[in-house]
Image (tube, one colour):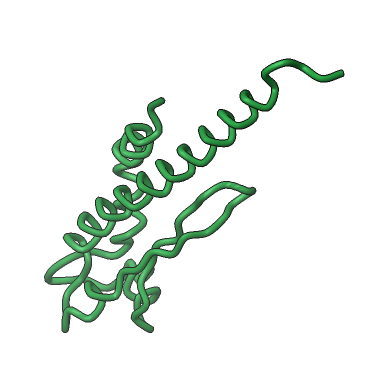
Length: 116
């Protein structure tokens, strides 16, 4: 059985999915900018290399767009996870704390891009 207008519905649905994916990627990019800025503010400073090593990488997670964020500096994990180290500037868990403490803001950034 063929439904009249089914092709038009599918065409519009595909446009919506494409537009949603573009909006999601834009939202992820905006969210990353926010996360990076806030994390840099919390990042311990010795030479400044760690602050300059933030990166993001697009991924697909369960078929949808996702974003990996982190640092490329070899010692980033050590500095991030070492709770015993006392920093003159910055703090441990600089990336994790930024994401956890700003989850609502990050979700609002993403949601603002997805409004239909």
